[in-house]
Image (tube, rainbow, N blue to C red):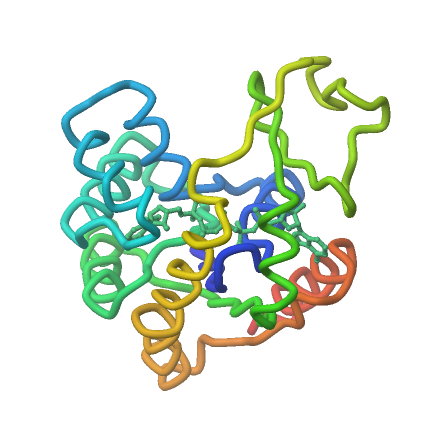
Length: 217
Ligand code: AP5
């Protein structure tokens, strides 16, 4: 199963992918996380990507496609994937079809997590994560059970993403509307696209996606 989660920054792609990966026995593949790993490793790919990411722009297609292709090459041929944040341009969507075809696979379901921009700004400016295990939190919607201690690993250091500044968030939202939203018809034409309401509670969004998968759409 290849499932794609498409939605603007903060719509809950990462949150939903994390919740679904264990239940579905699938691998959560986030291009944003893979690129941040490259930046942390100070690789040349990471250095190039960092400039684009810090200014809220997409990294060049070639880089995004390369990280996905490399990651998939390392997995078993029958691995199920939840793709979070890839593809984001028509060119990437076409490249993904090519990568999957080489493995005898195809895109199964594409879920658009629809959320209005005003909601997203509040979500992203309040987001933080455990510096040790990466577990995500929000200062209003999802606080650690014990303040200052990660629920998952007990870590006590937290970090805020460098692209979660208000001005950069505005740029990221603009890029979503101009470059990523236009790929939705690419999947709608093939009958693969379904839309969920990303403004519902996290658990309700998860249930909606699970129902879609069970219904086989
Ligand atoms: P990436 O890391 O993918 O960031 P993004 O798309 O901007 O999305 P986010 O991770 O910010 O949000 P999300 O939708 O995952 O929401 P989350 O679950 O965290 O990409 C970063 C950058 O990398 C890009 O800008 C680009 O430069 C580059 N890049 C990545 N992929 C690329 C590609 N394919 N091509 C080119 N460049 C690429 O939730 C956000 C917050 O809201 C959290 O605090 C969460 O707890 C809360 N929340 C989630 N759902 C709900 C809910 N239902 N109700 C209340 N709160 C909620």
